[in-house]
Length: 256
Ligand code: NAP
Image (tube, rainbow, N blue to C red; front, side):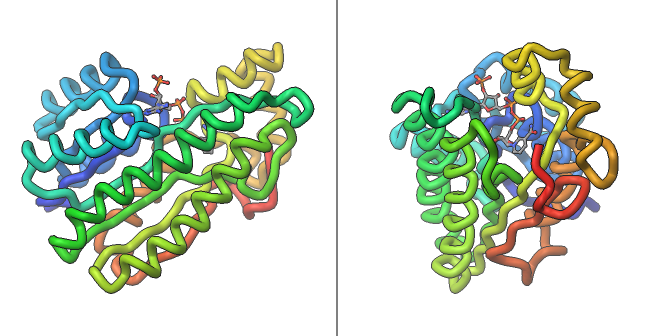
């Protein structure tokens, strides 16, 4: 018996990194999963992997910043699985730059993917969840919500997600829907590896430098975020709503 037996989850940005780890974890716990990503090949490969392991998985191409594509993604999830219990707002991008060099496009695209994307997905998902009088919405924020050099766009989006989460909890609670967020610190994914490349250091150099300022003295793995998301998506967290759990190897105040 899995903790998520009978549940259907939609994970955005599921092709790799934290999203893929989350989809794998939710599947291991018994959920059927819809994998939404811009990267159709990556999500299709993961659907095949999960299928081979006995999970019903559906791969969907979706830009979460596009309202029509989001609606289509939720519609196709419903057509296939007939319900939607868990939404994980995970899709994300970086367009880091110091404020004086940050373009309007850098600002707009980051806000569009993280914040508009989470809004569009939550709005589409709640229509189903309200009918079911059951739902779990988990959004992926970041320690950067507390402010981080070179990330005016990203930190604003990630702080915005925390406000959105609390508001969803208030508005949707009467319908049996919880909304929570996880706020990871430094996690070993392509996203942080690309940051190393941008800074002109190796991923290992960036990771070991970051580890020194983390109380646990190491960076995190995607599976360590996925396990907290799975908890929030499960009935073990049935009375937890509107919360942000930092998954950062220490208290929230430690930044990359
Ligand atoms: P990642 O490895 O770069 O994966 C992100 C995934 O999201 C990619 O598959 C990407 O597809 C997809 N994506 C990007 N834009 C999208 C869009 N508009 N619609 C649908 N999918 C889209 O990143 P990650 O490190 O796993 O990060 C996952 C989430 O955790 C993000 O929200 C990130 O901000 C957050 N986070 C990460 C860290 C960290 O240290 N890694 C820390 C705190 C928070 P493409 O490959 O096609 O772009």
